[in-house]
Length: 414
Ligand code: SER
Image 1 (cartoon, helix red, strand yellow):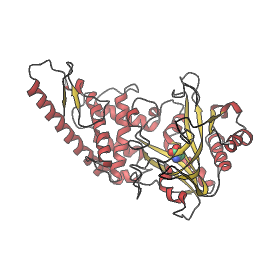
Image 2 (cartoon, helix red, strand yellow):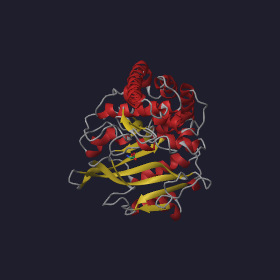
Image 3 (cartoon, rainbow, N blue to C red):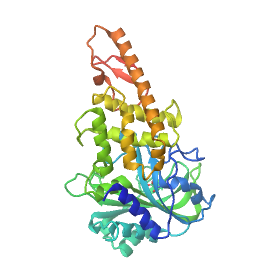
Image 4 (cartoon, rainbow, N blue to C red):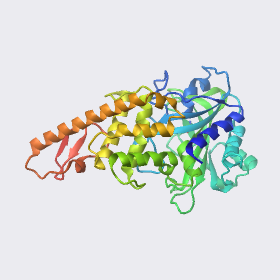
C-alpha cells in the first residue's frame, strides 16, 4: 500500500465513524507562544480540549504536518542515523472533544489496524502499553479486545517524576495532557530489539505505531494537574512508520515516498543510490522540513524559527559537501518533493518557486561563507599540512558558527 493511499484510508475510516476531516494546520502555531513548531495533531485543537474554543463538530480526523527540531520534542540529532527519526513527519490523528473516550478510542484503533476491510494486520504482531495506574485501559485491551495479558505492558513514571512517563503524554511544560496507551508492531525476530519497558526497547524490532492519549488534565505553570472540562481523546499515528509496516520494510526510509526522495538526493549529489548512505537520508529528510517550513512562511534567519530552518538547510548542504557536491543542489530536490506530496498538500505546489528561491539563496550564502573561511584558512595556515575541505566539515554537528579542526587539532571558525 502506497503512503498516499494509507493517508487516505485513515481519513476515510474515521470519516465513516462520524469524524470531520479537518485540514492540517500550519507548521507555525497560531497564537501559541509555548510552541516553536507544530509538533502534534492536537496542537490546533488545544483550546478545544481546554474548553476555551468550540467547533461545530465533536469528532475530528487529520493528517497533520509536524516538525520536531527544536523545543520539547526534538529529533534533529538522530535524523539520518536511525530507521525512524525525522525532522518533518506526518501524524494521522483522530480526536474526540468530550465525546467518546477510552473504549471507543481503543476499539477504533484496533478495527482500523486489524479489520480485513482496512489494514488487515496480523493481530499477533501487535502489543500495547498502558499507563501503570490505568486499569480501565488495561481491562479494555484484555477483556474487550482480547489481547493476551503478556502483550499488555504497564509503564509507570519511568522518567524521573510524577507523571513523567512514556505513557503519560504532555504537549509541553503546560497544557492538556493525560495517560496514554501506545500500540507497537513487532517487525520480527530477525531484527534486534526488545518490547517496550525492556532493556532492549531502543532497538528497531518493536516500533510504536500509534499513541492514543486520554486527555484529562491541564497542567499549569505551578505543575498542578487541573481536570479538563470533559475527558477527551487525542491520537497520533506516524504515517511513515505505518507505511513501513504496510510495505514490509523496517526503515521509514525504504517506503515509496522516501525511496523517490533518496534517489533524487543521489542524482543531485552525483553518487550512486544506496540505502546505506546516511547523508542521503539526511538530505531526503531535510528537504521535506525545509520546503514545508518555507511554504508556511518561515524564512532562514538568525533567530527563532528562521534560525532552526537555517540550521537544517546548512546541515543538508554540509552532507551534500560530504558526498562531493560543491555546488548548490539542495533546491533542485523541490520538484521531486512536490511530485510526492503536492497533491496532499497543495501549498507545496503553490509555493514551489518561492521555496526554490529561498533555498538557492541560502545555499549561495552558505557557500560564500565556506569559501571565505577557506580563503582565510589558506592565508593563515599556508605551509602547514593541509586537509581537504570535506574532511574538515563537521557534518554531524549543526551548531553555528562552524567550528573546524585540522588533524593537528588547530581549530578555527567559519
Ligand atoms: N499527541 C500525542 C502524540 O504526539 C498523540 O497524538 O504522541
